[in-house]
Image (cartoon, rainbow, N blue to C red; front, side, top):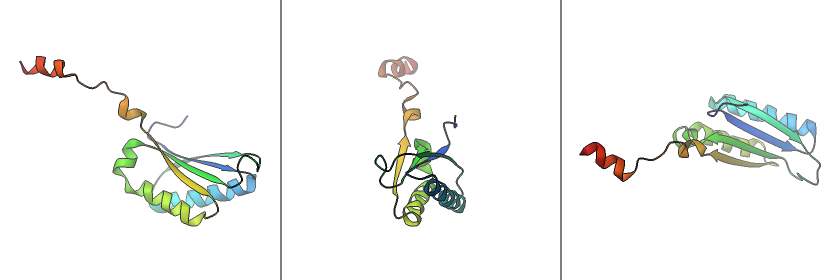
Length: 110
């Protein structure tokens, strides 16, 4: 299982050769922008994926602070024009900590 701060590139294609080619292109693009990426490929029937799909999954911290991940998505879209490229920001870590209530802040200041 990838760590919470890992960038994952999920590739869905109708042929194994196409998925492998896209993974190779994506690995080169990731290396060019200095990002470490974990690749997951899935080969499905052409009816389920008429066009290849690349989805970059990244933590909200990366989306907010590292412009390189957006450069990676742009490069993927440029170098894989027949694929649909999307970015999915995982925001569950932003909701993990309990917010401080007004009452707890008042008690500390009193």
